[in-house]
Image 1 (cartoon, helix red, strand yellow):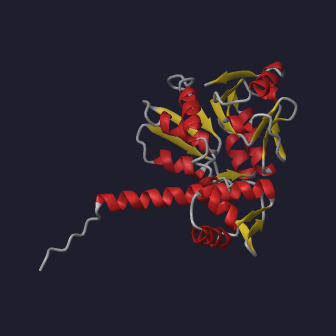
Image 2 (cartoon, one colour):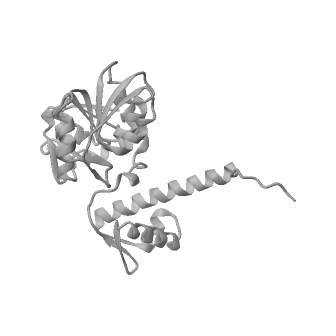
Image 3 (cartoon, one colour):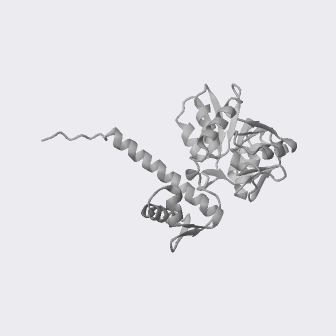
Length: 271
């Protein structure tokens, strides 16, 4: 009798991880198209994603089970918020977000207290900060807290609040109350939009209020946003440009949008 092996074949494990990653990327694409167009077609998605129509149908069923869309004949239609869940945003402009995060972490001095709002770019900042020496981090983001809680060199302060499943952020009066009792040196703020006239905006008004409280408790606030956020205005205002010291964005940003922000008085670093 041949011996039984309890370990998984490494090649099988790698292939499974690749399939999971590709599936998450497909989910993110489908939801972005839905948010932009209001509906999607199975045949069109199969061509865009380079997969079979059967695969697209399985993806749509899975997203419908999560109540992120509503199935329709030949495709699906938009349902709920225009906000893309953070778990499906991680793969978007990932290389650019890592560059932004590295530049952000370089702005942190020894012994400073750092605050991080929720977001995929701020999560990357947390990973860079975790590689440093002793550091204190305040966050209202559950995924960032989970990333840092196991790091022995990180003093982690997590706000209370009501959890938003879409963004993993704790928001509301409990979060605002916690922030009102602490002092922050540098806050890194993730946003859904940054515009010369509208300032910083996000999809949810309660989240906007908590992010505003975090900015107000900070000596210096820095916006971290990839190029897709520049010139974009969404539902809830966080604060005007004058409330933040700097924007760090990536080098695919529209030069016209960068110039507009600079003429609005915001310092912009293009990485």
